[in-house]
Figure 1 (cartoon, helix red, strand yellow):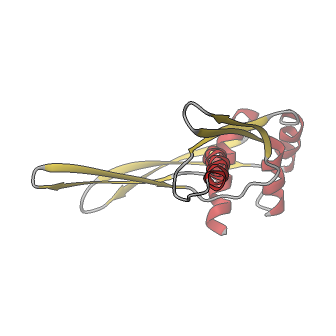
Figure 2 (cartoon, rainbow, N blue to C red):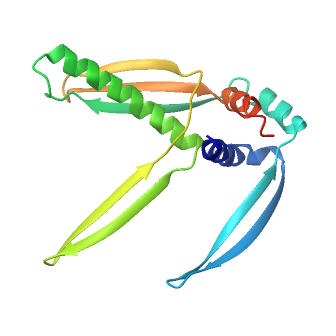
Length: 167
């Protein structure tokens, strides 16, 4: 839970950067046996004044996302397959919003065997959403897929922050 809150705060810092929060940028050099790289860490101080400003500025603003899922043929019942695809499209849209708020961890590796190269890339994001509003649910007959669009009020981000008393 603590990691999720830290990830949320990191995402929120990116969203509030235009408000005029005080920022400190620190450069940190990490050296390992394999490589040497520099990491930039940005610290943003969010106080009650900033929270109030965001509540006012974000009153009518939303984060929006679209999700899609194709109807499979896993079960003999077509209605069941369509219902599962609709659920998948909703989850895809929610994941897309969570990726806008929290950080995404990308893991990539390449394997070579018998001169054939295989690339494996996975991504992982963890987060919580409240106040999700469904805007549209559309079934595309030609492509046999569901497409949904959702939105979350930006003020919800502030409520999450206040709930965990992080500021």
